[in-house]
Length: 174
Ligand SMILES: Nc1ncnc2c1ncn2[C@@H]1O[C@H](COP(=O)(O)OP(=O)(O)O)[C@@H](O)[C@H]1O
Ligand SMILES: [Mg+2]
Image (tube, rainbow, N blue to C red; front, side, top):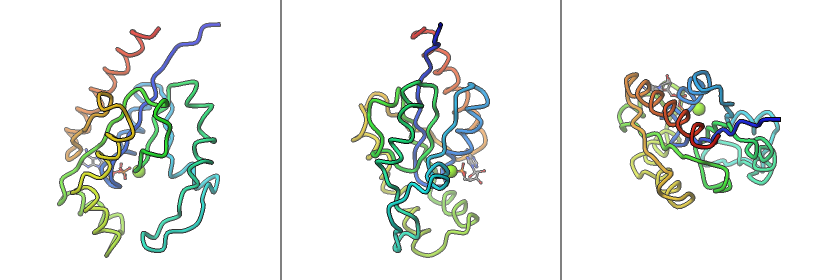
């Protein structure tokens, strides 16, 4: 039996930067499996309480990791989540942190219905490059890359780059 080796890719960044848009299209183009951790957690109710301040459920990180472990072990998974330090370092071959200009992000989150503190906090998260720093702490720095995600051209450019990286990785590992 032949097992083709395929890489695991993490797409992370502040809510609204374009992880889901990129991840779904990337899955189409590469044949890798797209996993949205927010959706997975909701489906399995992998929660451990509710954060009143940020108006969102708190993930049960251990259960999320357990749920994904077998799939990640096999390889070929694109993981989409707005945090990154809950996952084991060994899972990912490459980590992309998407970045968006503050004004654009503000508009995107507003049209998603975010208001008040939730809107402000998410825009601040991007200004302070919180997720990028989290990624640089959690993973080996040489596998962490920032991607501009402001325009449709950026999206297309990022797709082309990651498709090419994936093809090269598969050549090198099979
Ligand atoms: N590169 C881009 N250029 C312009 N708009 C984008 C880009 N990427 C995503 N968007 C738009 O921004 C919004 C948020 O994208 P989404 O993929 O849901 O972000 P996330 O999953 O990171 O929260 C959507 O309306 C999407 O169409
Ligand atoms: Mg999303």
